[in-house]
Length: 453
Image (cartoon, rainbow, N blue to C red; front, side, top):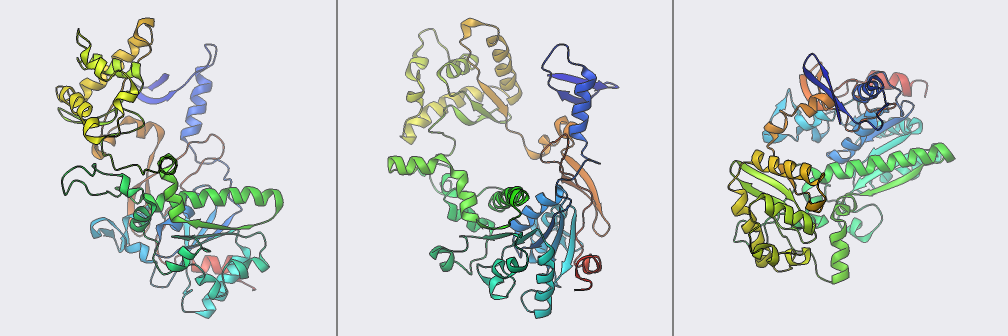
């Protein structure tokens, strides 16, 4: 890795692949990656109608498309989308919740009462005829019953990409049974089965043996990302064929996909993976351990990584008894929780003797020596400090990569949002403005899309 410096301050790290490579060339590439302004926008000719209602999945999907240049028009009733009121601790800025503010990137706002106004539904249908993408999160079949669903709109706009997001999709018995269940993040997490795998083991005493939800709106974010990815692939297909398509996103599908191999393991062994807390039954040691000043994450799953770990923790005795007891990965990954915890507690007795920084330094020093020594067997124990959010924000990494950006809405003022979730040298996502006002762009949208209709 190469560090560029400017007036004694860190500017950027970059990788190099050849001794003859020019530093100025690499610096130019890095600066281009970190500066998205003024680059081509891949979706600049794409118009997206976001008709999601009281559901951040659709709002988040639209945000991703907006950052790549799509003209996203957020449709909401005259009183505003209920999502505006969802916010931590009830805190808002001039009536707008913080999550809604964050998702106001590059969006326009139009008020249409789709539930009650026939005239507004007709205006929506006219807009949809010119749209490239429609996103909606109403109960399955409701838009269709209003005459503005995929079946009706596609007759006049065969290239339309229609993204419908519901808990169980559009066409199953489960979808019918839960048709009136609002698609909330907590129900997605619960219904997916993933929450049952998060938390302390069931062998722990109450109340510590409760399943846990993710500490953020993981269900909504994963569903929104899945919808945006599906929509992007549909755009590629449309570019090749001229054809649009229906995209049926079930949030349970999207979030359940995060369970990955545990579901396959359960079907193969006919035995579901239990909630195992700090343990891991595939890689071990692989988890969190207490130390003097907090916690560290440790990954030393291979046999030679494990031997390296117990060496730097001072657990490698002359008799080798400890190493012999846990010599192989198969020894360290039993399916009996109490037995697995024996090793966990033994490691924690040692990590509690050090601060997190001391443990990280020990691991880095050992790895550096191991890279140069054929006698160390390539063992590389990985130790990382478990950071609190406030300490994480002190990391220069965010500044170098421009991961956050201060933006200003003319109504709610200045605030900071995440920026540039992916770095690209030629067609990056970018935040041009933020906006939150209800119906702010009514006149602009009607003039541009509905005049002379």
